[in-house]
Image (cartoon, rainbow over all chains, first blue to last red; front, side, top):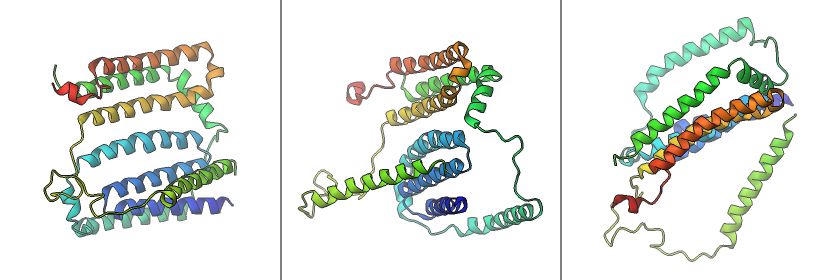
Length: 162
Length: 123
């Protein structure tokens, strides 16, 4: 059963990733990207990483996708319309890299097997919360200041002088 | 198998969405006309079929603010799970965190980043 779920999710992920790469319309490409992000989140959930799945949805499926949509609004559509076909030179350049990484991964799987988790935690959300809000209290509060600085910076850049 | 509920929920959600969209298509009045979906361009033949326009920068600003508050919300989730364990300490901690970020919201408000009356602003 687990293998069926993994297979379905994996197929969904690969299909949407390929769609995001090969679709011509950038808006459709974003939709495929969103679909693949949700598939990754479902994969995390099926592996028992609930927090990671939640963050994947909150941060990737919302914030990053919104950011990509903002980028899409700046695309010159004349360029999208005269589509030049698959970028052959880039494809040729990326093939050796892909081949080497595939070989390396294959070797690793063949020789060493997949990673075995050590000190497996039962409830990762609770564990992370305890660590984050006790041992890493100061970095956590600093994060809020960093977010505040980013916010003020964005507003300062975005508003015209009065 | 723990999350079979999610799967069922997802299925129901997709079915409801599809039903809504298809009902709209089936029941809605249809009287197609040639110029119905034609973007209006001041009487002249259409220059650009996509009718792309520039976006007001307010959207970008809102997007950035969404991104930052989104990250804030991400921190809240693990906090709710360990709230009982942390007690008052955790409450003060998160209160400070949200307080600092509330300054950001107030600043955005004061600077008019949430103001959407563009025409008023141009004058």
